Image (cartoon, rainbow, N blue to C red; front, side, top):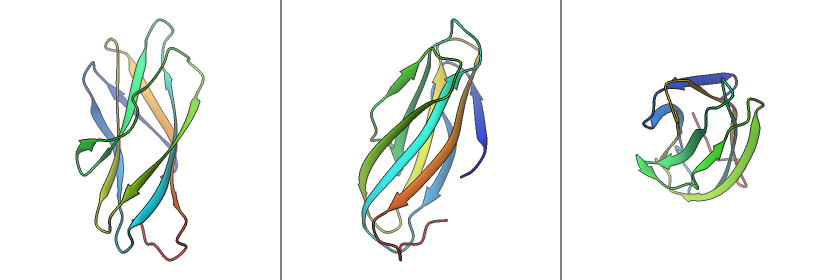
Length: 108
């Protein structure tokens, strides 16, 4: 999931997602996030199948901060990143990667 995505608002909004099609196991999800303006706290979290599963990450930095977290998933699961800010400013999420130990797993 190359590129960067932004969300505006004080409640969690979906950034982007991926489906795990044919393998169960452990995946490593990594992403970066930052506040668009100083004085804003931004929050992000990994969701699996619409349920919050990751650690809530937060920062006031206007420079991208990288996070990594491992999850156990099943074939057919959907992984999403959700984010929001403490006010009406932008929260930017970038450089989202999903990797797995099984080289034959297919993600789309």
